[in-house]
Image 1: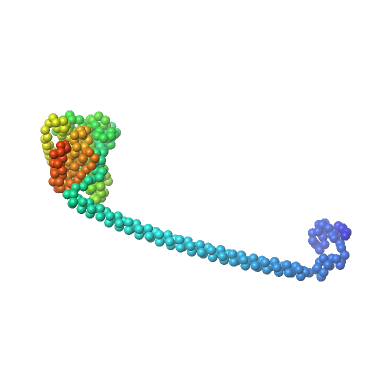
Image 2 (image 1 turned 90 degrees about the horizontal axis):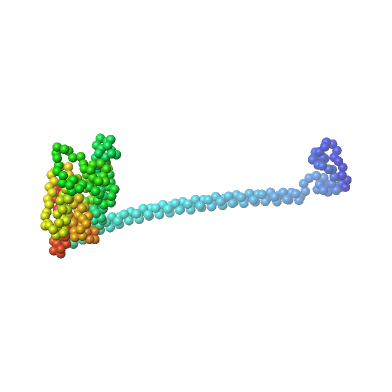
Length: 357
């Protein structure tokens, strides 16, 4: 074998191919290397090409089959999703039916309880223990209504309502202030009370369950929300003026002597004239103050109103409601025979509600 440089342009070989060297060999060997025919494709190459083409065709068919399988799986997944959504819809429908049945059961249960309470009340002579009422009255919240308040002196009325800061009963009108005579020549514009900013003209006493002059169950809901200009529901409140405290100071003076066996029992009568309801909160104030009276000898407080009665038992902090006041009178007479001391408030009602006296 001999090697030589190509003839012609640099970088070009035989027949225009890019070859770096030229290999020379006998013509017979060249023909044998090229396939024995002097140039053409051999049978082996044709067979290999056919094999490759067949493999490509088979691979293409396999790819199409896989794609078809994937599409089929996707369709199955979508079908399963649709089934799941259908099941969810059925579950939601069942839940809705269950909730509807529960609501019906609760409604029937409430009706059964109501009928049971009426039946029990009839068997017990219309007597029922009221849950939470004692604590509602006992823990009633105070608020001050004042004038000439420094924070509001620029307003045309200069009035303000503020919650009492102290727990329990705050400092209010003293006995001397309550007993001060009214002078029509000098309009009253409130009193200065320790701990109160401004001059005190009125206080409010808020019980979450209301007061006896309006049935406690009415305040809790059957009447529904009250529509007012301010949106505030005042059925929970008792409005207390200085005149109401005059009644309490008078009652307390006699009560303290009686509990210490130093005085006789005397009934008090408070007469309120028709008007804006200035005496309306008297009964509520007396009830609150009597429940807070420090003497352990005062065991019960009775409140008669609308032909019914509520007996507040300080021991056990419970309230018993009597649909007929005669049954409450029997109970009170029995307690009196056993030496139990208490105080009774008889609230005479007109058609428009209790006067709180």
